[in-house]
Length: 167
Image (tube, rainbow, N blue to C red):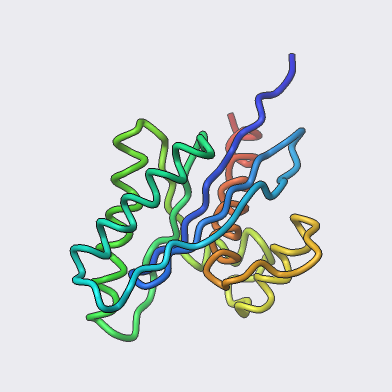
């Protein structure tokens, strides 16, 4: 029996820039299919920015048809005002796929770092290098938010493998 290839959309939430990255698991190996970012104008109201994120995410979901969505969870913040805005963006990123009956999984930065490097305190550059190496890319994806989103998708892919082993 042939295994179904699974497409995982990773999302790195932000109000100004939301990174996204699509990884497809083919024969148990992750393959990068697409990545990019949703960028909103700081001149727009918060409501307009959230609407733009929702619209663009709907387009990404329609174009790439992922089987699962993985979203980075808020774990630590320095600025409460920024954290609230990112939390609002996360809400949109969770709601839109859920409305389309696409399963959503959330991972903390610690979980993502551990999944990719085995070390929960890995630096951002280490994570980006691991994304490049695991996906066999010529260079680190830009912007950083897209590389982060691919890391979230890879974390989900690793978690799926563990779940399948334990079932």
